Each structure stands twice: as C-alpha cells, then as structure tokens.
Image (cartoon, rainbow, N blue to C red; front, top):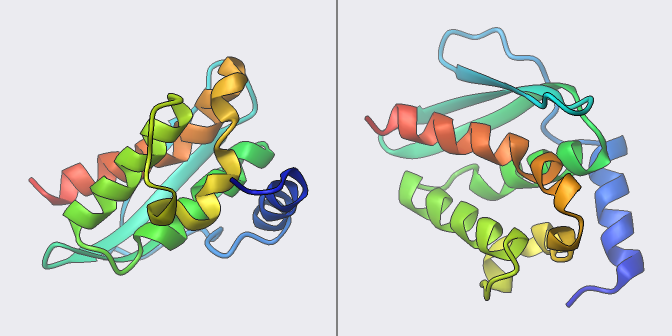
Length: 142
C-alpha cells in the first residue's frame, strides 16, 4: 500500500505534467473518443500498434485529475507490451477499482488509485481512458 501523500504526488504529477498528452495526427494511429455525460472528462486516446505489440499510446482532451492521471499512467504501462500483456494489466486495474484482490506489482504507479472504489462517483473518471485503451487493443486485435 502506498502512503496517501505519495499517491497524491503521483496523481498531481501525471495531471500537471502528463508524459503522454499529445494530439496525434498520424494515419498510423487509431483513435477512440470517450466522454463522460456527468462531468468534464472528454478525451481521445490514440494508439499505434504493430504485430500484436503496442508501440505508442497518447491522449488529448480535457479531464479531471483522476481521469488525466490514470490515463497517462496506463499509457506508460501498456506501451511496448503485447495485447495480452496489456489486457492483463488493465484487468488488474479493473480488479483494483472494484475492490477485488489484484497484483500490485503489475500496476506500478497505478496503485495510486487503490482507494478509488471508495468514491463510486469517481470510478468513471478513473476508467474512461482505460476503457478507450482497451477498445483500441480490441480493435487492433480483430
């Protein structure tokens, strides 16, 4: 379990200085737009994949701290992973936000969201980008 202050620092760092926030206008990328009907979260996730491997994931748009940070962290976690490896990481994340046993080692900085399940109204914020990443993996893997 992470210290509460470390979680806060991780979230704020990925919100204020996201590694992967960039609009992509490159035909090698596919994109999925996801927006919340109940809050500000409105993002597009871009993915480039080849031969069953995720080569790059970026996102753009407007999101709250939880949306932006969780999407940015997941982009880092799944880049350079096979589709199956990425799905396994995403599944561990979903277990965590559903308050089920999960593999902490698989989630690295995403462990900062380990109490998200306690705020049911914020779960959508913490999964909107992850759902888009998952949709793109499935689209590539057809």
